[in-house]
Image 1 (cartoon, rainbow, N blue to C red):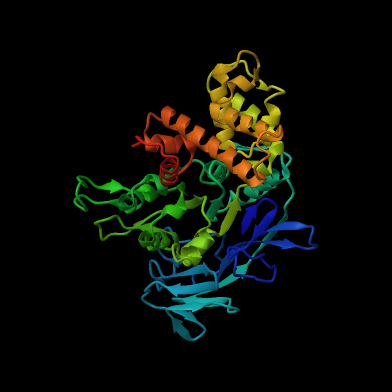
Image 2: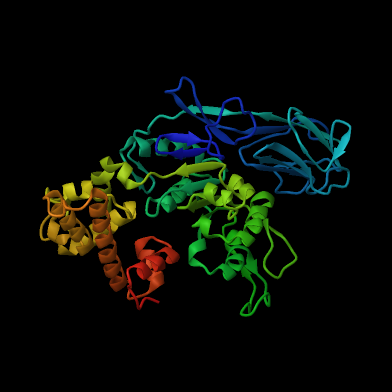
Length: 470
């Protein structure tokens, strides 16, 4: 399911259909077309014969395990059932029943199976136990929330309040979530909101940024390593997944994950266990995964740069956070929120009449993060209770002057596209020069301040001929 500015679609990008009973964990029904509903797909597993007859569990995860070992979703006391006996996995093609190397086998009817699509068959046998699965879907109308805040998220626009409504329903589940959107839209805030409204809120919230770690170290950082696994590994170390046990792991900049490491992440998502670098043992992990990217993963899949099965496993719920230019009605609320959470005393309460139209006309390529940075950087230069033109950063004022020149006819000798490109080019260079100075010529710090990955900042600096940044 994908949630964005007024749209909800299935993982493959097409609108989900109510009759597709088992292929998507979540979807949207529109009946009639103007009525939008969130369709959460869940499964009930019930023991219908055997020592544990009457036992039942309901799950919204995409991997369900059965066995006698503690930690299985359906823990059975049947002594003919292995410790980790079988699992049911939701895939793009449907539900798959998979035997996990059990002693006494897994059967569908009279046939012992290794792996099979369940289809219309709703009952299977493990040991002396018959298990039945039943879809128990929940359908909710998507009504914009009355509140204008959801944890750290702020917005009074319809698209944001619909997003709050969906988050309210999705957060308490165990569903894996993929958050998409441009840089600075608030993807990490969405992930934190999901964690804070989940049953895991008392557990850790661990952040891993694929774009901030060299590719050669990502495997060790995510999964951990043993002593001597590689040069410099002087002591064993738990990876991010182990550190997040019992809570949520947020994997940011997912599109930067090297292709050769994607199978390892897929295994963790499917098996819920990790193997440290240099270790033969596997360690179970109990985590919820929320990932984020500003890249088009479906395009990367088409180019062969991102695994389709990994995309499907991550995009059980796909939430697209709208850019600020598509919700300008939130500007005043966001400015007040930035002023109220500045973290230091000040007397500023809002924007001057001269600055408000500038904010409304600006496209905010850095989105909410850029807006907050502009507001906070303006505060020390404000004399009264409003942010005036003189308090704005040079980059925004330069772009404003260029826009005023065009509006006054100075520059009408060029095409609209040329005038627009020139204005944006001037802004970008001015912004980068100011950014480099604030970051002390550190590329990593500049990347963090701008909210843009290192590679992108490096390319922009090179294009503008700005040197000396390391």
